[in-house]
Length: 408
Ligand code: CS2
Ligand code: MG
Image (cartoon, rainbow, N blue to C red; front, top):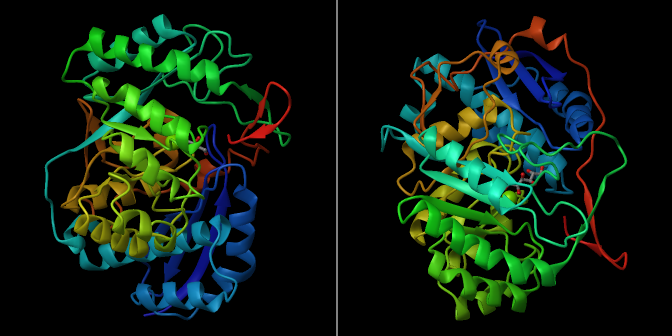
């Protein structure tokens, strides 16, 4: 069996999805997602110029060897562009494998460990009252877990993950359009003074059962993060995400000495080597890698297994920049993983998105139910994708009030 062709598409409704389609000589094709928010043309170029020409003639069933060929063969290893491109290839090869076997991917991993996988949505508000409305809406929809972000009084611009406009809070998605990044202004002191009290009021209003998550988005220094984590402990958060930048992983030791709040980290990681020490030293409680960015299903499954040895549960990244293909890859891992925790899930299911990526996966009452279709269980409409073109975009940058550049 041989790979005969591979095509790369860029485009989609609201997002520049990078989609890879690999064909074999028996008429079976596999699909993969190489979307890297703000750098979509880079993964597409790497795939088109170097990776796909090297796929032709290879046996698509040898997904492990193909992964090793690209990873080790690059010599200058790693990084988000290369790993996301490998991620798409690996996903597409697993898709082919599942289709050849006539089985959904979770069966190839070891079958289902649960009926549905709990997801969390993003509730946001320009202020706390606005956020409360947003949370209430998700709770009414049946969500059992919600990430909560709101504006901080006195902060010169909207803080991370929130709209400046009141009422723009349902499925609010940050606007990344324009190649020159928007600038947000951050004030740690105001955030530290305001947010613990806001989280306490959310717990008070919604009671003990709601899983409440909060994302600091790498903005605190280690000592500040330790203080913040200690202060929010009575809120009983499901997790506190990215309290500090992920480069300095030893920073978490200080936080761990001061607080038992569960910590989730990993959305910016590109390989198992970025998180193996965090996991082995049990400095985190949830690993947040994205299957695409970490190089595909093959390495993601290794991370899940390593995490399982250290009581670390999964909480795969599910920002709207991931296409339904990588969300499906994660859904299959979620159905199987003995150490599954939760899945980030933002409503992708617009009619336009469903037309481009038809599938029978479904979300019901805050639980994701994976379909039994062979492979990933998501198709791709080439005619639909022709409606879209690449739109330049960039993630914002953050500065302090005096102009100092900070972590987005
Ligand atoms: C965020 C992301 O989903 C999350 O937890 O931290 O939305 C992140 O800002 C984006 O993925 C950047 O592309
Ligand atoms: Mg995050």
